[in-house]
Length: 448
Image (cartoon, rainbow, N blue to C red; front, top):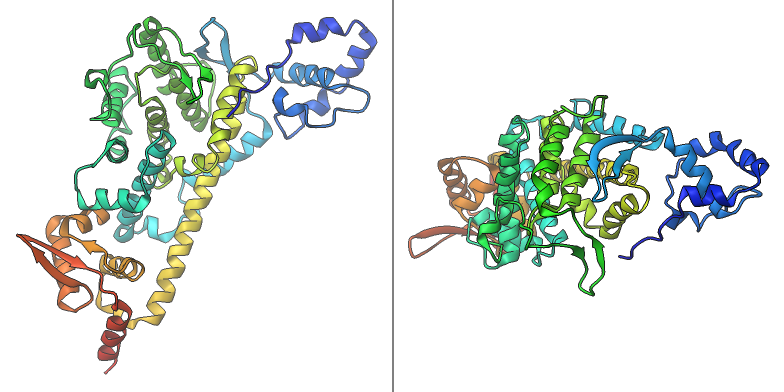
């Protein structure tokens, strides 16, 4: 990722236009500038053709002047005391409407999520997906299969990467319980402690602000610095202001709840109040804010899986904001697009699973013998020969009590669908390589 080109200052551009007639011609295009769908940064603007008769510097001046009236302060200040501001262009209003419809109500929601019998399985899968991809954004190195096996079986993490993922999973579960609580410094510290447990070089750094001697910058492995956060002594007051925004105490005008959540995400990342774990904490607070404001579908949505596909866009949206007069609109546009994609991917994922279920049930009438949790294991076992299942892993995957998990697996073992084995005192079950043949045989027995 590279630092974008710094835009020229408006005052310099106006001073350079000593011809008042030409400035008047530029101002006559203000209406055209306001209706443009793309919210271009100076770094991108130079790759587009300017309006007829004007150069890029003049075009940039026109765009900046057209944006001034729409920008509103949010309470976040930069290190020099300059205010961060944001606008809600038409493209963002459209995204916000789609978010309201797709994540806050009951319109057109897939039956597997509204059905109490199956929603827990989707919930566990989504929590694992967010836990894994959020950690991978911060450098965790492991595969989905290994990470999911760790969570499902309840085994202890083998390294820091696995510990980060487990921490994120626990944090996401905890946020569901905290969603009705107002945001406070202590709640943020609690989330940070969960996110960083057993991953910090200094364990005492969990759940507290970084100290003045713990200077932190955001950069890459080659020495490039992208961001220097505010001084440590400012953090208590800055966090108090952030909580006021999160709880609706400020500002004194309406801010869409999803916009508040997105700005909260940016705010914590900008202040970088902790020694480590700032990115994961910022995304966790975003989830808290969305659930706090009634977007209940976010229990099932992973934004980090989208961010991980284009991490440079994620980083650039921060840099565009900081390099263009603290204009948060860039980050707002990027994040509303991410949220919409995450909602669409959830719906597409559920549709795929519904199709798989439909075709499997058409092919194997033997599945009528099993409940929906057992059916889920059978489908998984068909794709993963040799997979080991335990009472604990089944319990974790479906958010059920231990006895229910035990009954499910013992029945699958008795019917020969899974191979029951025992090592020491532990009972476990293996997906046989000939599972398809076993199911076909069982189906024929049912049809006799």
